[in-house]
Structure formats: structure tokens, C-alpha cells
Length: 366
Image (tube, rainbow, N blue to C red):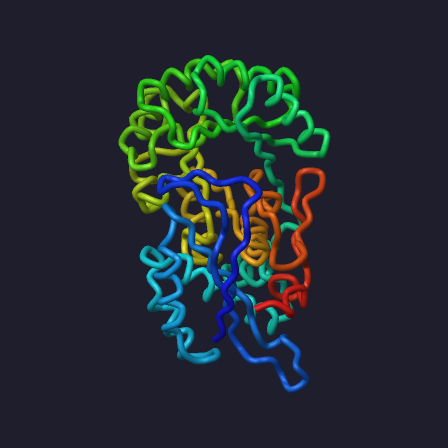
């Protein structure tokens, strides 16, 4: 196994619970040697890109990966089993993806097809619907950005809220709804900015806007609050039927296991990040577990580089009838490790159909 470190600048600094980050750092993980002709058909590539607040630290990720010995086979497989998806999920993602890429290439299947065959699931989709994300701005600027996204072919728009007053966010969302009409799915993402009373008021106030869901209305650790918010408003566990606006949890899954979220009845939608869950296989299993509990999965990146971002597209393609996912994140990076094999057009990402991640698209890196 070989590692190559990388660092990519973000186009705009990202605020996290542990402070602002300006770059994405990580490792490319290559397993398996080239064949006698120098071809990479027998090898696989993964990406391990830790994100503060979601995964282990960069140093812990590197330490875990450098403890992996061997090329492929039992030694590496044993190392994967020893990588704890809760302690070092990014490291496990990198190695798991590299092994899956190699296996899919040997089977002459795309990664999505390999993952579905392994789980006896329906064939993967050829394209994956994705949402556009609109940041903070006044009502006019927010509506204009949403309109541009719809003109580019997106039929699902997520608007960041929570940085302004509730009244100001209502005006922004109303401006977007008036601009794009009722055929476009509209999501609001509060990133845990509200307390319980504000979140309850927001859900009541936003009810007229026909929102697909409100994401992370409460701080990530407040699982009881999210469950109470759904129960009080008639969600699962209540007696009044479905909640007027579904609740999605994202950051909460960095603090609580999926099983705890499901057991608490705290979400209608869960946002699943393969990098934070420990690999593409674990992300697909999490999606199936959520679906079995009546909760809708959405697949997103952790602002990954192109290798992990491509893997996330394959994961989403392997989830039957997946709703729009947060995979249109390439523009958040100033540069990348290789050209993107999953172009987004008309609101959908194309799933590469070559063997493994993307045929030979990544053979020159890692």
C-alpha cells in the first residue's frame, strides 16, 4: 500500500464547530502493484480526507494508514477490519475504497455495479439527482442565485439559513419560492443554529413555503431536542400523522450513531457522508438501514477531492430511487487532483461506467 498526501485550497473558507478551515488535506491510498506492462488494472485507489468535527484528525488518519502493511490480500483485509469506523472513519474510507476499486476493476464492473451485486440490490442508476446550494444573502440575492441554479437544470435547491433573524430567513425563503415556483424542491439548512424554541417557531413559520425539509434545526448534540421537535409536531412517535415539514439530520450523525438517531425517532431524513461513515460499503448499509426504518437517506460529500467525490456518486447510484444528493461540491475547491469524471448537468451527476471508480481516469495519480 502506498500513500500520497495532498492539500487543496477551498474557494471560500468553511466554518466548522472547531473553527474555520481554508483547505482540504488528506491522502490518496493505492493498493496493489501495476502489472508487468505498468498498467493499473490490478490496483485500486482510495481517498482519506479527514474533516474536523466529523472524523479523526489528519495526524490520526495518517498514523492509522501507515500501520497498514502489505499490498493486497489477507494483510490489507485484516488491516481494514482493524480500522475502527468510529475512531478513524476517514482512514477506513480510504483503504475500503481502494480495495473496492481494485475488486470492481478486476470484475470489470463500475464501482456502483460492484456494490449492488455484492448486496444483491437492483442495478445502479446511470445518473444521480443533485441539489444546488445557495448561501446566505439578502432576499434578492438569494432568489437570484436560486433562479440561476434552476436555469442550469437543478430542480432541488438548498438554502442556508440561521445566520439571520427568523423573519429575515422567512423573507429569503419566500423570495426563492416566489422566484422558482412550486415545481422546484426547496430545502433549508440551519446547520444547528437554532435553539429549541426558535426551531419550533421556524417550522411553524415556514409551513406555508412547501419545504422539502429543514436540515439540522438544532445543535448536533441535541438529539432529544430533535426527537421532541418531531413528536410535538406530529412526527413518528406522535399521534398527529406526518410532521408538516420533515426534519433532516446531518451534523447529528457525527455525534450519534445512526441507530441512536433512528431509535429516538429524531429524523425524517438522514444525510450520510461516506467519508465520515468509514467507506462506501458502510454508507450503502446505512442508507438501507434508514430506509427500512422509514427514513430517507441523502448522500453527500465532506467537500472531498475528486476521488472520494466520485465514490460518493457511485454510492448514491447504488441507493434505489435516491432523492437529490449533496454531490455538486467540486466548485468549492480551488483546484483538484484530476479532471472530474462525474460532470453535473441538468441537475444530475453522471455515474462513470468504466471499471472501478472511473476506468483509467485516476491511473496517473496516487
